[in-house]
Length: 151
Image 1 (cartoon, helix red, strand yellow):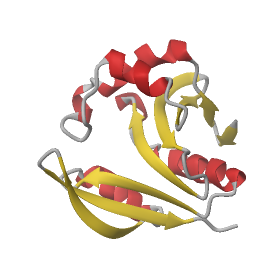
Image 2 (cartoon, rainbow, N blue to C red):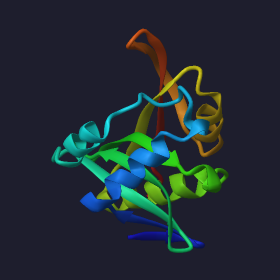
Image 3 (tube, one colour):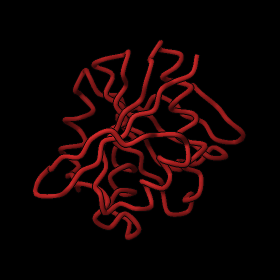
Image 4 (cartoon, rainbow, N blue to C red):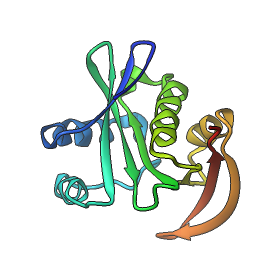
């Protein structure tokens, strides 16, 4: 478990997936996220390479983070989704993710994001992610970012 201020990042259990699904359907998410069914969430949960983490703020679920830990040296941030009531805590959540990855011995965090997701891109740049590539996924332009982790 990682904690900063009143924000906690904790390994998720299967029961929280329905809450994650509901959060990902909120209006503020829009087209920023590739929408998944609850069944797809369940399949991801059972994928040994992927780990869901619940973000708690004052003991309430504020959102979730999905990490790909297949390469511990270079951890992939697959998803960060916050409940609309907790928008504005993204910097703290990313700091928690970085702290967790550092504890694993990771040298960097990387992610991809739709090019039209300007809110997320501003957040990633704000905490030190640097763009290193551009690609296409499902017909959408995707930008790749990485952040070196200081030991």
